Image (cartoon, rainbow, N blue to C red):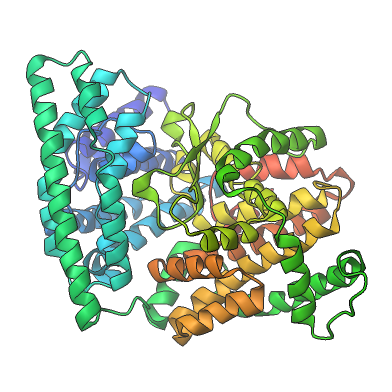
Length: 592
């Protein structure tokens, strides 16, 4: 088709979508229908993303798209109705495209968008976590992204903050109106994280504005609005604390969501070829396989660490005693963050020396202490820039052990001992999350980069752990392999734990036993994982689900390539497809 005609179609369609996220004109549809299905799909994806960012400006800024940074959506009924209208409008546009005529890549893009629309509608109309999860309401993250970014001059970013601040009070008023029959667990988290949010609106922020090139009037407004935001957040914390006290005294909603909602959420979030129950059964079987591998290593290591002591006949006791013996080797409490920082260059050197994956030296990784407003969910995490802001820092968030007692810290450090800490850094940093997310930002498909599948993202990080050891990281040290299997057993147990909590209603005591007695976890780690399992649903299954799917794909890919197989080629191609569900990457890699 003539390029001028295509451009006209694009201009008409995009012009219609800028009027509102939920409307399209007959002329736009007619123009789109003049182009090929492939061109229609690309056009639709472009307008969908722009319309989504208008609907969800905070999501946009987390993705590195800063056109709407000054907007803070009020989470009220009007915003939910806009979401449902957006879903309906986008589905209507999707129906105009003949997907049977699309390339595999474009068809997968539209499938990802369809899943996102389904998830959005389900969240608003069926799951309704906006009612019972008070921890959803916290303005700090979006403000911190704008304040700490370097994508624009300071004055431009502060101006966005200044406008955004006008909505803080309405935001929290809407939150309080939404909250109904909440869980105690999510209420406690909301208290803690909103207390951390106060740190974002600090005196340092006010001083930063005062020293900037903002006008005198803007500086005065800035100070006034920051102080007002503090007051608003403090008021909200007070309200939450009273709510928490009431829930503790009179009872609260169970954090368990039940089998029906669990199965629905699993299908939408994981996007696997397996059902939740099928994955659970697979995990139960894999648990026994890993325990058998651990037993073999335990027999090998026993004479070294217990030369004059008879081996226990019980498998669990044998493995447990060796793990306990090895776990005392760990970093000092005060060196936890710095030791992690020092290990990253070692991992990068190994990947480069072994030629495992192409690493981009231009994309920085910064190890930092986890910001206060993000604490309370995970001890280590990655905060990556979106594909619009590819050169921005990726942060490896590590929570220091300052708030732990000596007993808690020792338990935690034994869990993340000398060997496990290395596996953790592989998982979170190189070649795990950090590396994968850099690749995701470089994908030619913006859809695949933006709407990442959690199971693929977490599965890659888990896969990379074993891959590194298979390639010789640690010189095949049996101690490292034993601890790796302990870590891998935790991944498997995460799936079993999450499923049994929501589908079999297991108690905390049963959950802790599953982790400590069945998977050799320390008390602090088990308590932390139980806490995390009460705050999320399905997410804990994503690690194992993605890991198994990637491993199975590599096996089939290797068989297809034969003598031409290259582990580096597999990794580079696999990661080039953004954060798509593995089942779709499988199609792209095996059906060529």
